[in-house]
Image (tube, rainbow, N blue to C red; front, side, top):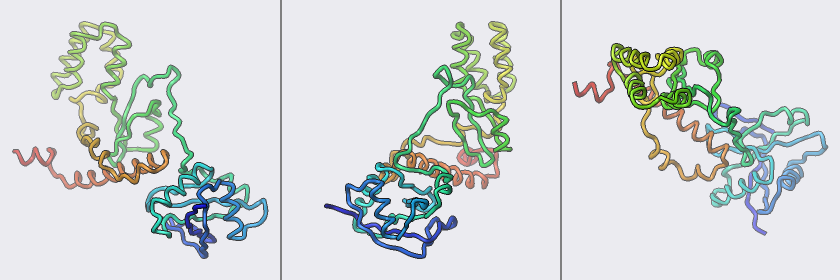
Length: 300
């Protein structure tokens, strides 16, 4: 029967600053390829000498510093961990399992963590579509948070991000207009495109007045949505399309090892990656003293 060598750290605690486990003791175990979660728990309990039904053990490991811990809590997690160990079979000390011994009540109170069995539950609105106004916002570090299917109210987000700026996605606004107004085509759509893309306030208001002449109700709806959130003429300098670039190719060239992660862990890895990119670009942007982009500044 094949098995993988695993080091078990226990009688210690996680160091949040270094993302490492500082343990007083370590033991090595052989984990068979066909191990189950229950079997692994019993093996670890016997090796480190845990007795009594009121004591629970929590098994976790770290894939990379700075990323959340992966918790082993079912058969699927055990199988994934064994396969992960086999990828680096020549590095026996890699991905050691850490053991926390908790009372039963404390174990139940632990917050959920990333695991191979985790799944993503996407919640849609009652009609199966998106909310009436899909929004996106930029927090105080200029990080864009894309609009989910059901976005929290501006009041809630402003409480968490006091310096957040809101913007309504024009594509979603167009979808709403098509649903509300059957005559949203031809001249009406042309005037709306002009209003949303105009650089000058005079041009914006000219297009908006043209819309009023053809469909007063649509004009009232656009005014109520607050044009400062979707028109280019009211652009405040914190806009998604200007601050970011096409990152599709960057994702295609990302670390191939990341593709072996559980879905939940992969999502967290991507979040950390994007956050790092935004921070790096923000630091570069803070060095700019002109209102123009560096390339535009060089041209003039």
